[in-house]
Image (cartoon, rainbow, N blue to C red; front, side):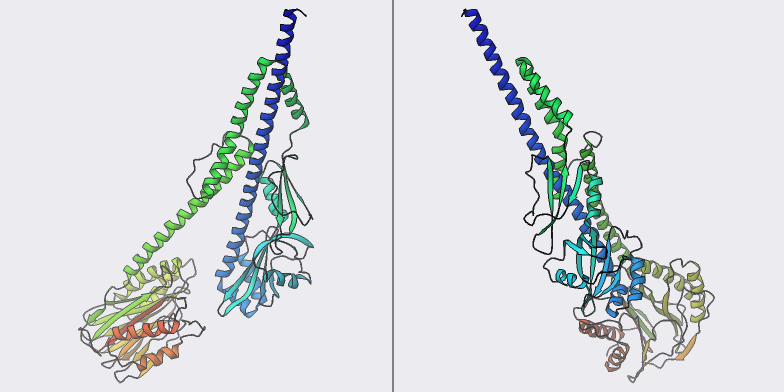
Length: 576
């Protein structure tokens, strides 16, 4: 064989071998890259599904928290008032999509008291619920019959506590099909749900590459991991695209020069294609761990990247809401300081009278208040009030009523006239239908008389110099702010020297201890009569001490306010 032929044959064989090597290298490189991309996609799909589950868990928890905070609902469950409970729950769940979430309330014996669905519960509901209540976990997936046949639900079972303890349970059920439908709408891939499944399937198959799919097992949360269904997310390219890619590989392998360019081009394209996906996964990982992450470019990339970017923005909004909550708490603290500034900061001491008061709010802002002031050289006025409700609305109504009543009181008109004019002013601008109970009195130091009017407030306790205690005569007048053009009676009595008057709000007699016993008006009356002190500050301290001893560790439910006056005394502090 001529040398030229042998050289040509050698070059041809070497070129062929080199081409085969490059083709094999391209094939293996693309294959490994595809496997890595599939694994990353499976991890991403699993993370997105877990986010949907967490969002649903938070929604169920918020719904149960709404029920737990509503004392009227808890009281209806405690007293098993099904009709009142149905009306209250219908109002509380007015914005709930009943096809997406089902709410069931049961008593301690697991007897249904309220069902948000119109379908009747099956006879086997109570035994099945008994097994779930006894399970170690209070939430998870379960195959359950809630009136429409056996279906898979994501369940949240939580006890409802009121007064003595657990009065019932709240069951929030979300159909798995609804979650899968939302998940399918949020993905650009093919999402299918298959059931039932083999008992041994219990985990996410993140390593399955042959079918190009992620398999998520829906585990039974109440029977130690038994699988109820499989969620399959598939991303299969079309056969034409797959065939075209293989033809490109084959044609590139025939020419040595083109193999190198093809190899470099494929590596560059793969890196560019998966760079946004890697960045998105990195952002999710950072946000999950509470770290700061750069924003994603939502204008480029595939549909998956755009969906993922919206999910990232949702996480960012959640963090912003947390910051808003902190700001709101700071604003409430400022509002509390401003409200305390509206109250007298020192006792009123004048010849023949000493007045002092104190208000302990149950929340950051309160609806109770007291006030005392000098009207002229001979008269001093004082009042105590309780706005219905608690929190910010009651505090705002309190500030408005305090300003109106003080302005009218400084004119020196009788207490009944002051309350009548204040009632008209409050009723005219009372869009929230709030009201306030108030006791307002004027003490004339020269005549030693007390003129007062009472708008639905608890009657104060008067204590004589001899230690006898009684309630001031009631006037039976209505509260302020509800009905305009009301007339309020002015009552005048003589006050003997050494008399004391204790004004208070219902937060004192309605306080409860750990055994759910009430402090009560009779206990307060006996306590004031048993104390020998003539000093209003000492009397206030003794009442507060006995109240704290009675309630113990029981959380304060209502605002507690006291306003005490001692009459026929000098302006200097008295002694026992």
